[in-house]
Amino acid sequence: MYLNELGLKDFRNYAELQVEFSKSVNIFIGDNAQGKTNLLEAIYMLAAARSHRDNNDRDLIRWSASAAKISGRVTRNSGSFPLELVLSRGGKKVFVNHLPESKLSDYIGNLNVVLFAPEDLELVKGSPGIRRKFINSEFGQMSANYLLNLLEYRKVLKDRNAYLKNISISKGRPIYDKTYLQVLDDQLSDFGSKIIQQRFLLVKKLEGYAQKIHQAISGGEDLNIKYRTFPGLDDQSGFEDIRKIFSEQLAKNHMRELLLKTTMTGPHHDDLRFFIDGKEVSSFASQGQQRTTALSIRLAEIEMMKFETGEYPILLLDDVLSELDGNRQTQLLSFIQDKVQTFLTAPSLSDVERNLIKDPKIFRVENGGLIYE
Image (cartoon, rainbow, N blue to C red; front, side, top):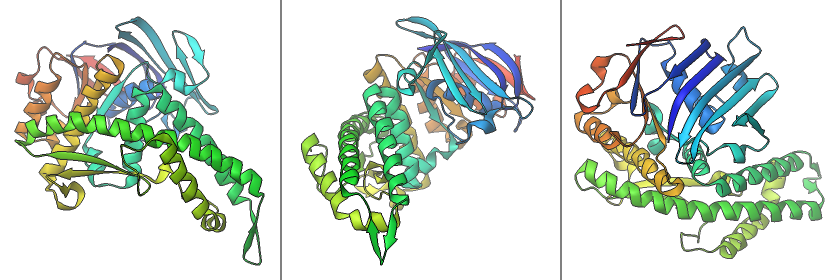
């Protein structure tokens, strides 16, 4: 798959832009604060219907405008079609082939992207929330069923938390409707157990791809990825086993959650852990090993998306080449050549190993405009 063209109107610092891309490698060069990363963000949003770096869509609209639009034409094995995302102060709308989609689960997956940025090191050594965001973002692109279960789970979680917040406390004891809370518990454990089961399966697949890539880049180190959820569960656990333990944990934590007025139980508290030769990467690995782990995971995503969707995704590289040593740059650029449509940003061409890239299309970014070089 590849992105033929991109159109922007009142997005970030771009008043209006229309640009066509190469099917292979596209390079955006320019000084800081000119809009290079904004272009990658726009492509990411066209795929995921959300920003990878800003939780408030209104911040993405150019300060003098009331709405922003991102549009593009995607070519897949099944044909070529337009995508469009419109952001306004009241929300966002998405369109596939000019037709509105009411469900994000029907929109996401039409364009698949993998983003690799300097902050990806936080994927390895950062907070569990960063890794959960990674899991949900990447697996949601690969599996419409996973995304649907995740959206339903979030709806129930929101309802349950809202109910818990409104429970009154009398003489140190919460007053609540046990029947209604049980209904919410049953829904939460149902959708949550499906998510946990799917995560076990998909993490195992990701580990298989990442192990081979990591061994090639590192010279033989063994990489393992472990999904951490309720004690007693692993990738051999069936749905009913997961649901039983989930329900037991909910019941066990009822009083604590009623007093804290929030849901402390479920996959929204789970985590991923990475190990090299049996040692946890976040605690014992060097910075070079941590970078190699992050790179291996991103390259593994590309191969996994190809397997799951039948097509390679688009790769976005946000100023990462300067963060990689010569060996890792060579491994990365050799991996993507003639395989994946790639968009990369760099301060200048001297920061790019051009001898490893065949016929790149180069754009200079200046004050929200593009100059083709």
